[in-house]
Image (cartoon, rainbow, N blue to C red):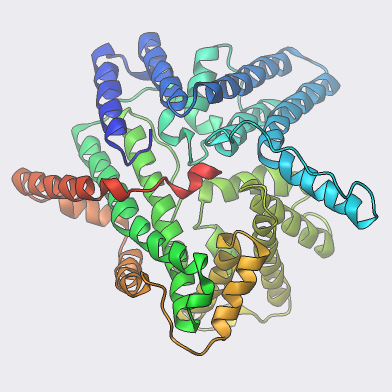
Length: 468
């Protein structure tokens, strides 16, 4: 049940109507039960089997957190936290990395002449959609209880709703228990103004996805499928196209998630802040997938030691954090290489800054252009499915001809639009301007948007981050 489907629109209307009828907001038990049941139904619509693993993760962390709250022994609390880590990361690792690890192990054995005829048996189960997101979300609850940042909840309903709340369940933003659970204690109703802003946010998110990300994806897919058919210009358009495809796809999902959550009176964190205006690699990660980058900082980088040790230790911690962040995206050495690339960029920025040189000495515009192209190198690594495809795309950059894959000319027009929209002022200003229009004109614009989305629906694609 994708956000860009008629089924989801009908689902949202029914769930919101039920929520309003129950009155009382999230504090009301019936209302919370309704939201939880709706969220579980939403997830089970992908596959009922997926729901079992979501329930397992939720139940384990709820029970272990209560155990940590009751225990006075620090050692016992560590054991319980360890069980949470093993349970969550074990399930995540089994589904996402089991086959990759088996293939890698057999490859190493083959190098020494052992087991050359063996091949790993692929997993029979498909990767549960959104498992990386809800695993990190559930795990952060256990860690925060262990740290004393938040008090363990006796109510399974509260914890289950936190983990499974459907707007951000499948592809984020990753919500912290410290931000979500207090909202259950202080429920709020969406005001008329907030509802209007939320509907506008949802419409913008859908437009980003259907009108920009999906058409760009057609051109990008064509180029990466046959890199031998393009030259340097086509390769550049393909990489630039993917940079804006993944931005509008993922930020569009986040817009819909944030707008939908606000309809129910919940605030979930922003996930993007015009990332291609970043003036350095560090600034990029303050703007891109913010909920993941801050999660990695707080639950991986800082526990590893952060920047409290020597400079060499700090660089190792940075590299490990970004490399593991890359591998979080899936069982591919290309994802690991993408994370390592960004780790290297962050290390290089620190090294140059320590010498009094680096990006900070350049004009702002030049810093932004340079940072964008360093990020685009990373996107080339990220998008390539195999090292062979990556090499083929690099070879396309070496060809001086201006060959185009069939859809790339249209991508050029879309890119101009995409760049312009990305550079525009903050979303709040456009929301305010839209809401200043007369209700009749707003209705016409909404109707036009719905019509365009309806016409584009047959060619709509799944959101890219569903696979993670």
